[in-house]
Image (cartoon, rainbow, N blue to C red; front, side, top):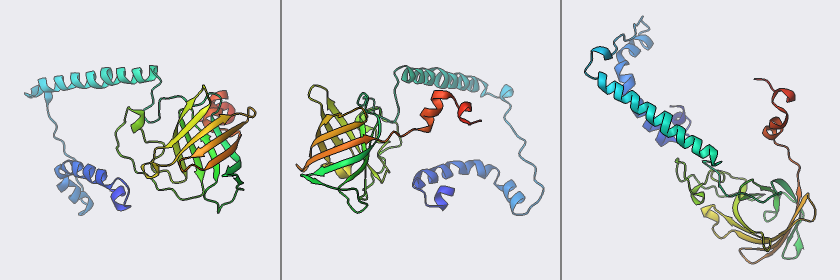
Length: 252
């Protein structure tokens, strides 16, 4: 009801859930009206099914066994299998670049030989870059991004269908990358359907342990050279894991 009242994004699902709940309220509709509208003392319904004296007793036993098999054994086995294989329901399974994970500031940005200085009015320049632990790279830019809506509420198993990280995100562009260790070629492809032609091909090198240098071209053939510097960003969850919640002052 709140989702419908505030015009949320899932109003169709909310409507469906409200319709499903109507039979539950219909059973107590008279008592609810007496309690809320007339403000009179109202006794709750006291009837309940006596399973021991019902012909549905065997059905109840079969239902209990089926519930236990499905939710304890089948779901438990699937969950344990995903845990053992380090599977993720939302993010890609391919690993990222070894030793290059985290947030990087864009120090130098050279497009077609012209150095572009940082500016809130320069739409073509990158602001920062994030290398994920999997094969995803995201870039924050000044321009407004056409947001892609999620295609499904299900949990797709194929990497090509997993859209959790980039759908409904309006300030970053997300790329899936392929890296060739033989010649250090990094290929980026934007998975947002509104940016099909947005791609890059870079020669990747590391001047030092805190910097990443990208030299190459974009999908339009423009030459591009980008120097990235490690932002040394600390993530709270990672810091807590190192020393424990209580040592950093957090208590349940």
